[in-house]
Each structure stands twice: as structure tokens, then as C-alpha cells.
Length: 448
Image (cartoon, rainbow, N blue to C red):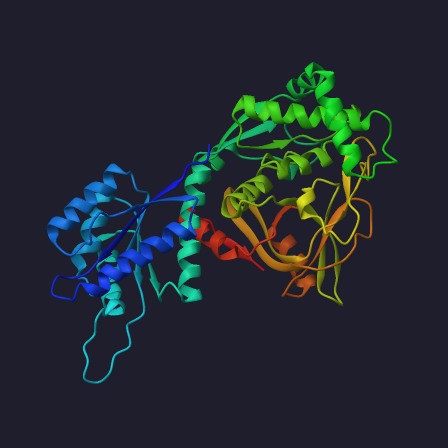
């Protein structure tokens, strides 16, 4: 179950400096953090840290609140004592944040001297072996705000992953060796807990559903999508599976899942592509083809953004336009569809044994990621791109993404590195945040 990050916020200054600016920054920066990070529990120190007694009381407040990380804003110049004491007493990392200096002239004094203070404090913390990060710039500066956001969301994601239960619905499809996984390595690296529920449990749940429940869902889908070529019985199986997976995920306490979507499900004419897309829009995220490592990327991207992601193959490149085609059988969330083109519900585009969405996905910035177990160590494959406005050109669902690096170089690097064939796409730029996550987890990044 996702856990909120507990963020301790404190403003500091040395007592011989004027208090007006620290008081102003304490109010403004604390309010800014609360506004920008609703998914984080911000614990604001009850006072400004300017004396030894105040620091003792703040450290005790943070310990009682079980803070995971602290943000220390420089109201004005602060000696090494504040950051050193707070990190020693709480044992958690600290972000040192130095806003820009107020304008000053030749015959006026400095009112903050925050940059100098942060420089000396960071050096002291490194000598002490404390974990610290530094941010320079006022909250209005896009670079400073972006770095603060990346750090806080990275810590939030790492904590959330450590409290994540991942459910295996079956194992992996036949001959998909890259979908095998090392459960102990995953738990050591990410903290994700893995349990298994046999597909028979899902099939039994489908059979136990009341007729009125799945028929109501069938009517809803008939109104929403063109499915005039869907074979008899496929829609009924679709609605039964949609309702059954929701119940199974909730009953088992799974936060995310992966499913062995073929061959057994196909043999029963219930290949789940369209079901997985619908569930993603409901906040129930289940990766396909039993690929746990791709699902780890989906988990991270979802925690960072709250958005559904698209687990996909990369099937084609267009060297002239430097576009990569990301395609899958039909598992994308309908909310990701490009409204310019019709989104159809059809039979599975390859095997013809279930339901799938056929359509093109929306344009916009995307982050492409996959965690890879390479040589017994996790690495992150990471790339950014721009999904273009382009209709699908084969059956199934696709996003055509323009990238910066020449696409032939990209595919050659992918194969040279041993990156497997599934990727998770999210419609947001979270590359910085994913890099920070990897920094916290000591995971190397393969960035293209």
C-alpha cells in the first residue's frame, strides 16, 4: 500500500542576522511545499532554527513525526551546527535550499548570504557522512523548483515502492525468457514484495459473477465502443474478466500486478488486452506478458505522475523522420487515446482470442523506461521523446515517438546493452525524477 512521504521543513539562520527575511521565507516556502506536493505530508517545524534550544525542539518534532527527509531553507546565513545537528539527531537525508540573494548595493549589507552558507554546510555534512542534496535558487526559479520536485518525488517513489505489493497472476508466457525475474534481487533493490495467485482463481471468479453484473458492464461497453466485428462471446468474457480482476486484486491486497496473458487466456477466448487498458484508467495497473521488470518501470512512473502508462513493444523505426513506433496488442488505457482517431474494441490483432483496443495514442512528451536485470544487477533504460499526431498503421494500439538521438543508433545501443523488448511509456517528462530514483537506489542508468 502506498505510503506518504513525511517531509520535515525548517527555516534556519544564525541569531546575529536580521529575522525579518527568515520569517518571510519560512512562511512562503513552507506554503509552497504544501501547495506543490499534495501527495507528501509536510511537517513544518513549529519555530525557526536559530538557537541550540530551537534545533533540539525541531529535531524532536521531526523524530516524533517519523520524517523521511528534511528540507532546510536558508532564511539567512546559518553555521554548520544546524544541518549537522538535525541530520545526526534524525538520521535522515536533508535537502539544503539556498534562495537567491536579495538585491544589494555597494553601501548596503547582505541579508541572507545563503549560497555561502549552503556551500560550507554541504562540505561539513559530507565530512560527517550525512546524505545531503543542495538546491540553489528561489522557488520562482524553474531550475530550482524542478530540482526540488525531482528530489522530493524520487524519495516519495522509493518509499512507495518499498511498501508495494506486486501480484503475479500466473508466471510468464512460453519462451519469453526475458520475462523471468529474480524475486530476491527485486526485494533487495526496490523493496517490492511479490506474491502469486494462480490464473485458475481468476477464471473461477469469472464463473462466480452474478449475471446482472457482467451484463450491465457489457451494455456500458456496447454504448462506448465500436465492436461490430467482435466474435460472439468475447464481450461477455471481457466484462467478466474486467470485474473478476478488480475483485481479485483487491482481495489479495495487490497494489500492482502482472499477468500471464497467453496462451491459457487465449485458449479460453479471454485474452485481456482491452481489460488491462480499462483497469489502468481505474487505477488498477496490471502489466502484460508476465514482465515484472517492465512493471517495475510502470510502478515508478505511476507513483511519480499518477498517470496510467503504456507497456509496449518497439516494432519499427522511421529513419527519415527519426521516429520509433511503440506498439502492443491493445492494452493501452483509453484515456491515452488520440481523440482525432476512432478507438475501436476488436478481437486480439494477432491471435484473435480476446478483446483489444485498436487505435493511436495521443501526442505529447513521453518518458520511455524499463528496469533491466543485466548480469545480476538492475539498470534503468531511459529515453525521452515526443509522441506525434499520427494514426495507427496496423492492427492494435500504437504511439509513434520522435526522439533526439538517431533511431538506428538507439536500436543498436538497446541490443548492445541487452535491454529487453518491453518498455513503459508515460505521457510526462519524469526523466530527472527517474534519475534521482536510481541515484537513491544505486542503479546505473542507460540513457539514450
